[in-house]
Image (cartoon, rainbow, N blue to C red; front, side):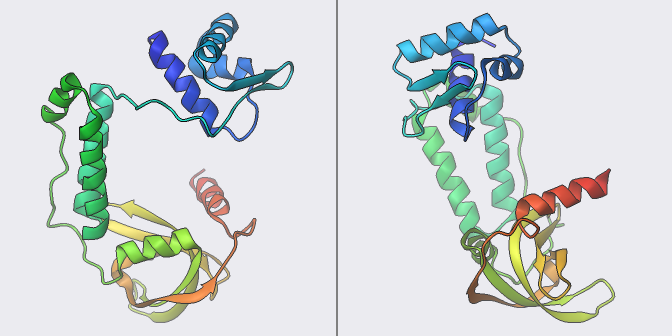
Length: 229
């Protein structure tokens, strides 16, 4: 990794952290020596990046610091373009429009050489007739997750049994071509996954919820990881 790229990545790394991070942790993360990290941090401070350090504690950065425009390499651009194409083909029109808007914004910031790379991308996501339709509003459901708003719906399982469910929605998960809604089911009192194509009579409820230790996304992901072991 070139030094300029490493310096940029260190800034992004520090911005993501909600606590001080030691020089040794940074050295391990970027696979360089402690001496290199000390030099890099000093170079960043000398360039005006508001990094503060305390002996025995580590480095923190002022989150109000605005980064310069982000530059991508050719592979990063190809990955972004592929992701945007997949969003366009496998979600809904509203979310696809947001993806295309993001793509245009990225295009507008690229220098000429990278814009040429963008136009030579050869990895694509094409529309597929395997896409399984659903009746629920995909964008509305995303907004319910963001707002922590309970939802209710009728659900038909694989045995064609129908139940009325009220859940705390926490995530949308793609198992192409199937989309799953993950949430805390208030009927079963446990995490459940629901196929979007088996949901009907969907409604966003006026009640909201707050994250609880055993009923949040982190708890769901922990349970999924344990089930996979």
